[in-house]
Image 1 (spheres, rainbow, N blue to C red):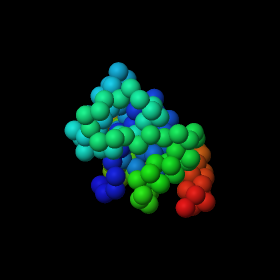
Image 2 (image 1 turned 45 degrees about the vertical axis):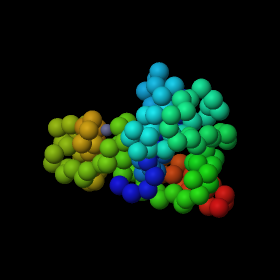
Image 3 (image 1 turned 135 degrees about the horizontal axis):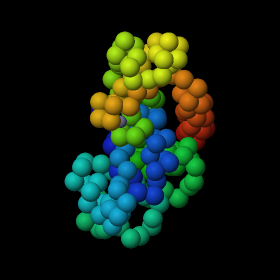
Image 4 (image 1 turned 120 degrees about the vertical axis):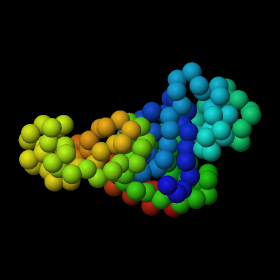
Amino acid sequence: MKGPRFLLDGMLGRLCRKMRMLGLDCELAHSGRSPWLLTDAEKNGRTAVTTATRAVDRCGPPPVILRRSGAAEMIAELFSVLGADPEFAPFTLCLECNAPLAVIAREEVSERVPARISRDFKEFHECPECGRIYWKGSHYEAMERQVEQIMKRLQENS
Ligand SMILES: [Zn+2]
């Protein structure tokens, strides 16, 4: 996967899910690992992102410190600090574990999702890490609207 990779401070769980939804590669620091955020980020070739202005170690490259609130605002701020344009690939990453999703045949999911779901939907994606199955149901439509809103917000910012 191309583009910047991030390690988010453990407090930023909601932002992390939104960023994964947009296809931005980001891991969430485990709770208790905040003091080692910079070291962990450097070790894993990721950019540290936090809202804390202190209380992080000084061993790695400086983190991106976000001061705005709201996912769209924070993502806009992050890329403006980086001086890069985000490359979005919505719905390509698992929201739970950040792994790239793979297409899975309908026949293969029929045992694993409710009968109604395998009857009503044709396209399925599976996370190779956690086995979670994704389809374009009502939850997807709600997320699609969020993606549109975030992208619109970012365009207004640029
Ligand atoms: Zn997963």
